Amino acid sequence: MMLKTVTYGAPDAPRLLIAHGLFGSARNWGVIAKRLSDAFHVVAVDMRNHGDSPRGATQSYADMADDLAEVLDDIGRAHVLGHSMGGKAAMVLALSRPDLVDRLVIADIAPVGYGHTQSHLIEYMRKIDLSQVKTRGDADRQLATHVAEDGVRAFLLQSLDVKAQQWRLNFDVLDAEMPKIIGFPDVAGQFDKPALFLSGAASDYVLPEHRATIKPLFPAARFAKLPGAGHWLHAEKPREFEAAIRVFLSA
Image (tube, rainbow, N blue to C red; front, side, top):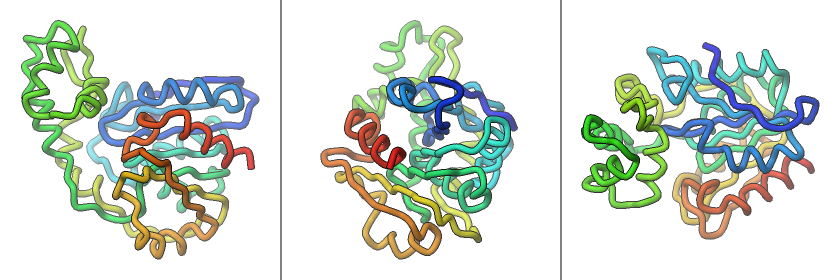
């Protein structure tokens, strides 16, 4: 499945592939991708069943890793940065096709299963009466009856095409495959090149006890936290996130 890509920077610069998280898209990463494009040829993807990429029947990490591998088979080996769901897909890619990955950056996720389903957010997005939506503000007012956090609503509504009055997400598959998305597959292999696990200091997604799972798979893993950031660390602390990425990738 050839994913929709958005590219930034000179084609002859070192390549950086960015894989977004659940309910996200390449456009969520536009600001950081543009800023990093002074040093890298940045390729941001819409993951399957998100944005303008094709719709597929599954959302397994094996399939998502294969999608990313197809992009890299086309453009060449690259550094890979993945956040949340995209981070898990990036880990499976690095373990199964280490030949395609130079350095690996995993943003606020570990190779473990989690208990918090996100299906309630799908339910809330589905409840919006799109026939009554003429502006993003119309959708925001409807969503606010279910989702109190301004930042979460703003993030989710980036996937709403207001003009077309439709979501750029395949809710049916994402909902059905939620157990796979919040889980993590049994994977063989080892990625022994540099890997940075960068997490938000206010997030509970990457815990000290996860290191015992991470290190056998990623023996060269390094760990860092961004003070004052939660799970959406790249959106909450974009400058600090960007600086950490630059230091790691240019080391």
